[in-house]
Length: 287
Image: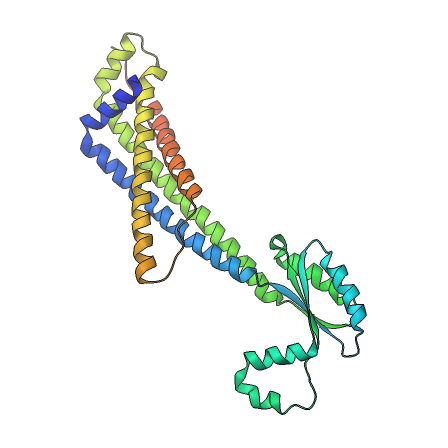
């Protein structure tokens, strides 16, 4: 309780400094929050596109449908495969006529269906990677009745690369602004220690341990980080609502992200305070 009282008293002695520290941390973490919202929505969009990653095997015209049925069961048993759909020649022509309406006259004048039957292989959610798609394509291509296999390797590679870039960018930007927040909290705590230099010197003279002296500053750093995190959350949510209503629909980040963010901000504040106060206590002499 003493540490909490001392921490609150520290805010009371220098409300402007405390407010500026909270505001600076809030603005720093706001950038991280905005990037988290953007990254979450990009990831959701990529997941939607990624769910359509599939391997298409085009079959020979003289294929035995019973043989295709047996092969379909085998392919569905692959660990990378979520399901297999057989598309007949007639269905392929119908789909093409529905998707390319500008060529409806051409399709209606055809005397022979030129489109092949195919097997559409849907990949499992954890196997929509270039390597997994290539493995499945190579195995499916081994069937004698398969004439050609396609899965858009270049497109899958680009999609997978984009996902990694988004994840790496989030870590890099988040780490950069976390360092900035640590420096801001450290400066605030260092100034608070210097403002109480005489009081701390007297406490050390009468035998107070460094842990006892340091504790209120740690609580002050934790509270500063927590308030900064709450401010960043509020600002991020406000920006999200503005963009969602005026520019494009967005999805808010999961609640556990916010909980982790607030915990991270509080721990960040405490660790920054611990580093700052440890350095300053060494420079304060005992009377």
